[in-house]
Every structure is written in structure tokens, then in C-alpha cells.
Length: 215
Image (cartoon, rainbow, N blue to C red; front, side, top):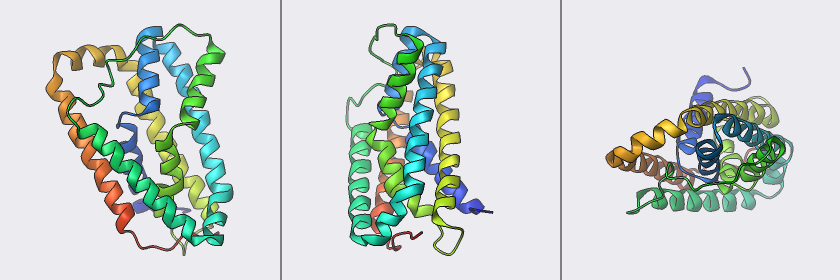
């Protein structure tokens, strides 16, 4: 196997924690689904999927080589990634944090624009950049298969988890908006749970002493 079960489970848990945390992708998909319907949300999700593919290919092709040549860059990226995760945790835990399902209205857009906006939103999403640049390498086994093969396999696991959860969110956005609107305590529980997950990931990054992955 290119990656073992522990690595697959680890990246799946990270992907689940991040995809359930409010961010640009979730806010856009929910807003689009509520205002323009399920089909529009799914088309937008295809654009998000294309963005994941771009990040995955870039990570597998060049990031490992950069880390091998400039190990200090790996440390800088880890610290920056941890800082951003802590920022997301703060936003989730602060009083009056963002309500994901109180989405703003968006004008109706044609299919091509829905796809393009989904792609652009994902490519400009710093949370996904942190995932591929700073978190995914944590699950690469230096003594295992080539880094690019492991990166592709780990990225595939992340993409499956992210797209599955986002598809469920898109298909149920309107219902969830009504349910959570009547039960604000559920929103608080979600915020605290996700804030805790993000904080734990940030601590893991800061405490990790593993060397940069090599090709």
C-alpha cells in the first residue's frame, strides 16, 4: 500500500475537522444552495473539487522538493499554518461567531459562473492551502513510498471526505438553516467542537519535530 491505515485515518480526521469548520468554501456553497437551489450548489461543488485537484497536483509535484532544498521553509510554513488554525479556532469560539446557515443572498448565476466561482473560492481559501502545505506532509512516511505517491494518496482521501461532507451540506442546506435557526444551542455545540479540533491541530503542528519530507 502507498499509505497505511493510520495515515489514511489521520488525514481523514483532519479533513473532516476542517470541512466541518466554517470557511470560504462552506459559506459560499451554503449561500448558493439556499438562494439558487441544490443544483446550483452541486455545480459550485464541482468547481471546489477542481480546486482541490489543483492543490493536490501542485503539492505532489513541487512542495516536497522545496522542503528538501530549504528545510527552514518547512518550519515557517508549519508555524504559519498553526497560527492560521488558531485564528480559525478563535473565530469559532468567540461570542457571536459567524453563523454559517444565516447565509447572505446571492444573485442567480449561469452554470459556467457557478463552477468558476467554486473553483476560485477554493483556490483562494487559505484553509486549504494550510491543509496541503503544512498538514498533509505530517502524514507522509519518510521510509515509505515516494513522497509524491503518498501525497496523491493522502490528498485523494482528503478530497473524498471533503466532497462527501460538502455534498451532504449542499443537499440539506435549506433544511439545516431552518433547524439550526430554531435551536441556537446546537450551533454553539458545533462551534465549540470545531474550535477544539482546530486548536488541537495547531498544537500538533507546533509540537511536531519531524524533519521535512523528502522526495
